[in-house]
Image (tube, rainbow, N blue to C red; front, side, top):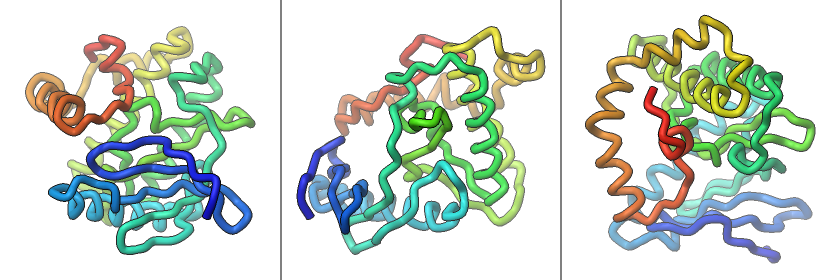
Length: 217
């Protein structure tokens, strides 16, 4: 492998863009993780690999190229992160909502769509989702699963409200105005702790999305 480019580095390892077999791949490398967190980094890596395998037929999600004991190679998606592309076309967000629905039909919630770097705008204007470390698969449509799926939708709607607010329907405005109890507890209690740990302790630098824009709902 040659032409390596580091895209992200933190206590959980490195994410690199590599040339591999005549194409480009993204590598999540846990060998570079902090010694005390290497086990957790590998758990999250394997979790992501399982989720991506379940979504192999979904356009807008990367494919697993190779899984090793300490590295995950996934296909490269050519796209620009949401906060850099700043799309104002309502069709993009409608397509992103359809992509979320396709993932949900596979029994999966992303759980991290609040972060704008996890949403890409591809060259043809279509959406893609990346970073499924926090995703959750359920074979049943339990109440908890439905709540998590609704939160995925709410995060997409928050981005839509920021970039093209006039496109929101009345129903979408109602969803934004009524976060779940779990979302309220997270925002008021757990999120400040999460931000302190991930940003101050772990050194994560991902843009948090609506939270960084000062939005409350």
